[in-house]
Image (cartoon, rainbow, N blue to C red; front, side, top):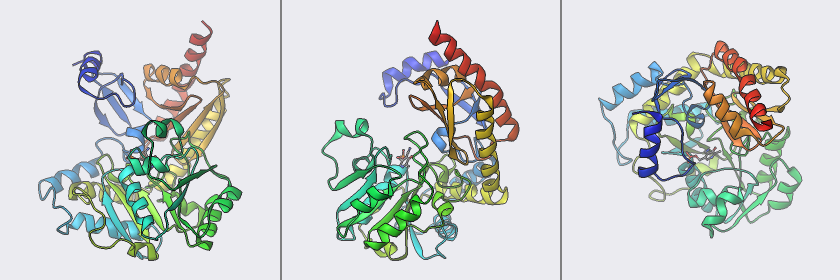
Length: 397
Ligand code: PMP
């Protein structure tokens, strides 16, 4: 069926949650996808920062195929080797010498829900989060999300959450006190338009929360697993949080989330207090192991840091009148537009064979796979001006 036919079927059968999609993606290989009409696209969005190794990566295909034909699900009532290995590996990588514990789940929102429930175990209920921050759409995660448009239709949400400006150390200092259970923060606000906090922000957050005995929860759902050029975004600040949430890139395209609690926080849940049937599914965890293994064996962290800088510099060099700046870290990049035309730019880019994301009216988000090639970066930089020009032309018509 064509893209157009599928749109009609989609309208009839599926809930409209993000607006009507134009394309049906049928097949992918690396950073390239093909739609139902056979058109080819360079994928700079990768399932919203999910397909860390791109599409159909042989290591993920092999791991998933082997695992599903061995044992596909066990539940948490039994141990399975891929979950055990992945938990051990995550603890090694998170920089706490294994002094932590992992709870697996299936998505970012679920990882955040687990973290939020865990903060209640401190005996305190006040939680500080950031304006513009995004933590998911379930009721607890939504209570932490600092975007009014997403929250308002669903109030009342979980009480006790206070939002403060992102990146503002003084506001954090004023908000955190002896009643505060936790401060929840992203290293870079992805959904808010790739907003990078000032230097020293996470260090200050670590010091302030520690001073008041509050937990520091770092939401790495979008920034973790190599996206910023380090395993976890917080590592660039040289700190260790109490709780880390992960999802997106971790499963390389399979639904896999994790809540890592470190040090004393690792002991907060008592048996029976939290869980989910699919958490730690061996197929998803096998995919996760393939992702972590490939990032390490292929030197992808260095690649991401280097290529991210090159793409950002390349976009600046275009010196296009519509581009007002570039921000981000690693391969999470925001292109700032001087006008609120990101949807038109993304549509024009799509016609030119690029999948990019109009995350805010004046911001385009790029989150290509970590395996994105230098030639693919050139292809993007060559095609982007045409997409920007066609927007300008269309607007002045
Ligand atoms: N936290 C952050 C930082 C996110 O970026 C997202 C997803 N964009 C979530 C949580 C929610 O993840 P999910 O959509 O998998 O529930």
